[in-house]
Figure 1: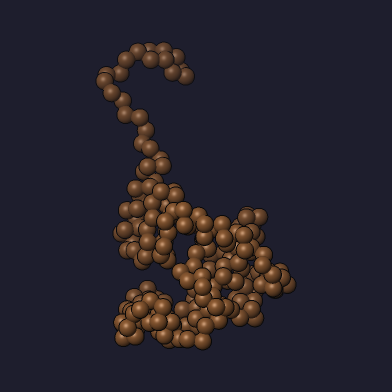
Figure 2 (figure 1 turned 135 degrees about the vertical axis):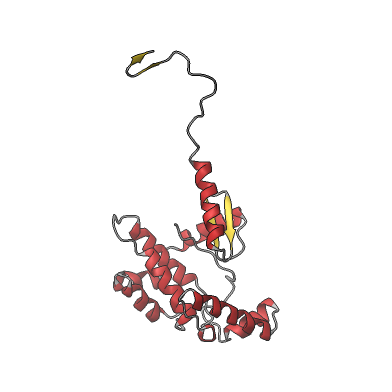
Length: 204
């Protein structure tokens, strides 16, 4: 699995003082009660999966800096032969955002998350205080635009099929099986009776 950069709202300021409910209500035109109901549904599904969502604690902030941090992890993983850092960092950023009130615009908080998964503090601060990995992030955004991606999450399989949004295990399994079958064609089927042949052991 390869994580790619994509933002639903790249126009967000680095830090937005509004609550998540206010933000969604004002930018998406959703009634506040509908937003609260959506949050309750997400929290319920999360609980069933062993995840604790604290939607009221979400800090509304631009995620671009966190995406650049993920590209740092990806660059290190490209040289690694064993444990990969990117999946761990991705999980911690998501858990922090949705469950622990992590402010994605706060460099010190991002540093602590990065250190917890094995990244070096000096290198992390160097990236955070620069525009490094901007180009890599923009390349991902351009690719998403070309593929027609407009929702998160979207899983792209073999650059031909898309699974947008939360999907059931059954849907994922069927999609993966379909793509696997297409990429790994079945052995040739023999037509007609066996004729005279020669193989590595001689001729019939």
